[in-house]
Image (cartoon, rainbow, N blue to C red; front, side, top):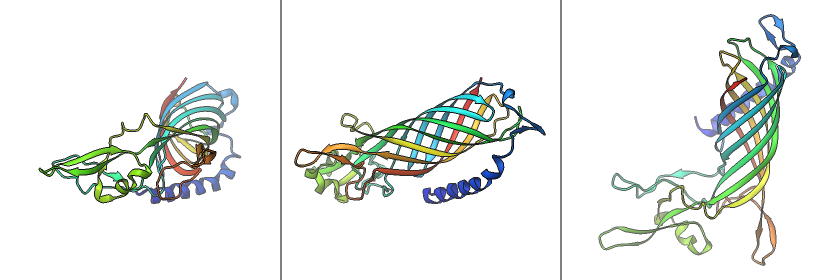
Length: 277
């Protein structure tokens, strides 16, 4: 499903769920026809691993939860994810064929952007499930510090051709000096490997805030098998020196010629798998 259509679907789903929240949150969670109380808590801890797909990338998280009662949980989440610029478009190298391994590349990209966030949150149950079967529905919010990391994006650039027709290439990041090669599609052989650039990273501290709904359909309550639908906002900025040597606040430089930003908003889906004890 295209990312634009996926984001529309997620947004429509969130709107529908929010519309029903005022009705559901007034109801006590139940098992069968018997209302539950805070005294019915059996498990105190929860651990899960999450795989996320959002409108501009993907991520992996580790989630530790303290179950205060059947109505409320406190969460600690550590997440690593990448965030792409909205105008990133991967294209096939014109030099790719069955005889070589020229990689597809993103034209005009300057840096890859990753973020590592630590979020503290609260999850509140809307509708509980039985000890076996059923779906637990909850809403949540979380926030915390986020460290943005940029890694230079390397391209394999063509600088010469031998007498036998072999390309002479170099793996380079973007600089003003090589702009006439880096931004010339006829001289781009393909993207360099992911290993390039890790010795030249820059950091952009920031903050992440997110919220949404969680649907846990595991057959047994001691297991976690849940889909999370949510909305997240990241704000990142860095300090760089201008031409005069003075420090200034910098946006995250993902693309060369397109507008970069401090603010990143994304809709996402996440699958959480784990256990309670």
